[in-house]
Image 1: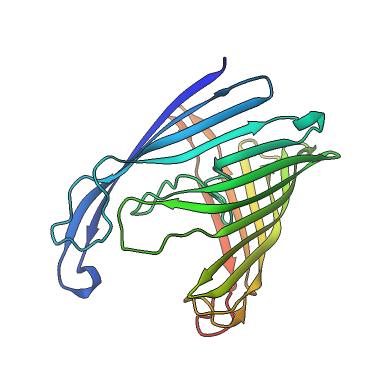
Image 2: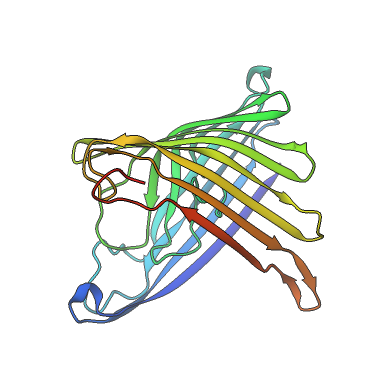
Length: 276
């Protein structure tokens, strides 16, 4: 049997200076421990589980933050089954709670974050299908979002309905990956509908110069918001984004180095009108 066990522990120290203008400073440690177990059940069925704990090492001196969990507050972050070639159809299905996307994705990523004060872990509860379409693959997913964090200001549970549609190829062009996508999320805020759609194109790959790689993304907002959410009020989403990143992989006597840089252009936002 092919079984893999992995672990990851990440700790962040935060210093709050004059928190919420009450003229008090505070500091504390947050930590997140993740343990994953993946393996093959049969030739066509595999699965995985990710569990672990969020916690705060030291309770804030002034108790400024609400919802600080107990130490060692264990959570189930991921639990899924993947079935390959369902009924000899060449379609792969993933069922359960799963991660999706890459951590550097600007628009669509569900999994453990590597930064931020709250060490969030997001996941999707639902179904995902990967369907071959000629030389390309069509990925579709429908799920509800699950979010876990280590303490923090009280906030309502986020159980957004999420869908994804991707058409991608990793072999059509040598050393180039291309993807077109449509992502969406639906939620109710104060009994009002908030429906955001993102669509666009992404490409990444190697350049002719040895060690040089790039990633570029173009995305456009769509959808409507029928209530106030802090982004838009009774308006339409109509923003856009362009991002270009460059990476240079270097093997030196001191070890591996990866200098990188990039440029991101966004259309801005309008809190009092149409959202961007």
